[in-house]
Length: 100
Image (cartoon, rainbow, N blue to C red; front, side, top):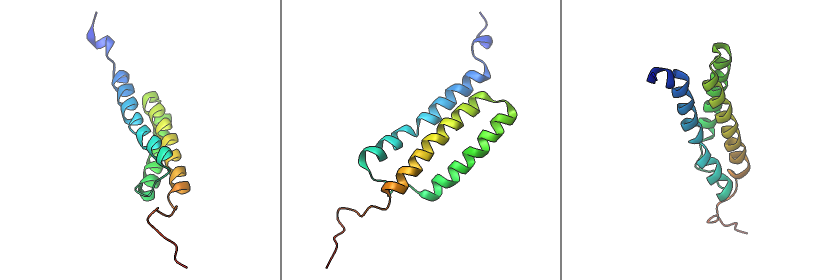
């Protein structure tokens, strides 16, 4: 059994894709649970989502399945984070009081 046949470049690609994609799941869960997103940068999210769109186009053109799958899932997770940011990001903090 040749180790080279067991571990292909796609194997490394799928492992990298899984790890870098799953990395966004804790942020989605935290933002959903706490209903707070003030520490999430909207500029970073927009830039990252734009970059993901370019990665998706590249992956389609290059027929790079690991890259495509990872970036589509990461795109979805980041759109969820952006949506939660837009929903929860503008809520007044509990320390802010309205004066009459």
